[in-house]
Image (cartoon, rainbow over all chains, first blue to last red; front, side):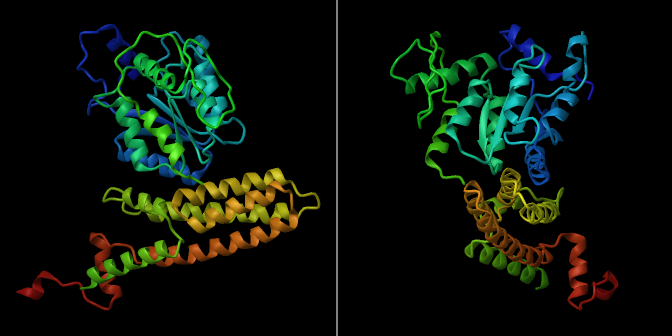
Length: 226
Length: 162
């Protein structure tokens, strides 16, 4: 596929505000997902889940391998590095060597790669962990075992026609947490409370629709995984 | 009649496994992912699960046989087994792993040995059942022939009807 990298098109959309009906993710362009999981069984399942939702998939077994395949170490020399482009990284949390969390930090800490959305998967429904990942910039957190509806939802809100633009999505995420918090204009983090620790930012109110993060968090609270 | 009967058997057996708790909803998810383009998906994933599990059970046996038991390692193996069994819907194996991890936390070697026995047992049970189930796969076009032949029938040729 000789496309110049999806993300450059995504950025173009940002600048051309008039072109708000144009989705770069039409049928002619497949969303490319990098899936990272040390479990062979899980890799096979996630790969199929993504393919059946019309994504192109590259599945690797470790964070190291993921960074390697992204060309992470070459970023310093990459002016016009037109290599391996991904639209989304979905990674397991618990992996030997580099955890999904560490991979997330690496990605978000890099100027070249931080725009790539990262989704974390974990078999353990630990709110403190979820929180930590979201704070570090994870787009979403899926509790394993991953279902078709999880992947469809993810694809739909991230790359569907009614997707929220990256910037707005971040605002929306924070806005939702504002509603949970009694106070505003305070950045609270690392609270070890059973509920999700509220984060609030003084942002101008943008029209926000309920993101799937909100419903997902609700699902985590009410359902009983494990 | 053959195909219908086989299909009915398959469904009945699957339902039985669900009722008895050997399989849970995640197995149904796997079935959703199987289609004409990937007709053997469930079989392939389950096969991977068998390979993976046998390796892990072997590693666990070795780990528990050591003089100084490395409980962290044991926990890591059990976590992996829990994960893969959960991913295919092998509910009883998964639940046994959850209990196993609790015992591991207590650093109780004897308890762990008992848990290992249990997991092995549950694994063998579900393996037998899944193998039986997948032998009676819903046939797609060319294996219909195989099924008919296996059932002692002949593949009707067009000439036969002239």
